[in-house]
Image (tube, rainbow, N blue to C red):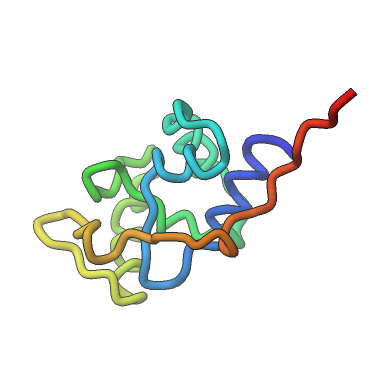
Length: 112
């Protein structure tokens, strides 16, 4: 499984009304130092990936190259009940706290 496909699989598990940060997604897929790569994956994700549920470490919506992306993200979050305050998602209230069952199973390296 590629890094991007792992990211997309995890982001699909974020429930409505919750968000995760780029860094959180990176940690959960086993690549703790790859928050920027998660952002890159979100820029070109398939339509069925709820990209709008991923925000930066301060709970802010990151700037997008496409003009209306930030507004679209805000609208989608608000439609799911995520209230922004002063342009930020209050992470203490809305950040996803996955259980073990929420996480994709990791392949273990084979022993020789």
